[in-house]
Image 1 (tube, rainbow, N blue to C red):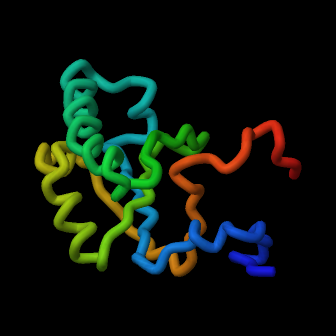
Image 2: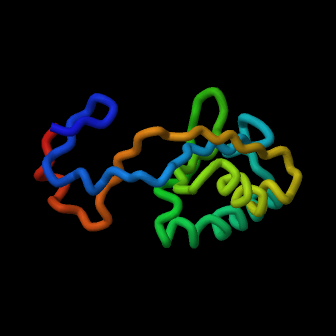
Length: 130
């Protein structure tokens, strides 16, 4: 049985593995309370940030993106497929939150092994047991 980071994959799930590098990208906002107290200007900036990344989500370059409600302070996360770190950094350099010079910063972490769900589910969630 094939295992990814110690977890078994069901037969046929090998196609969910990918050889293209993925990165976990952490977006740190200008302050820990950002999600709770952003200004109208910051809210508009975040809308532009969402519009910027949406096409990459739609074509599958971004596997997941969203806010993380960390008790120590909110931050954003994305799992992005890219050929290398320079490609990730070039995408991020065009992000409206970075262009705003408003105190946002990215940290990028390579993911040596990734298992992705298939585009079309193979079974209803109710048929999967833990």
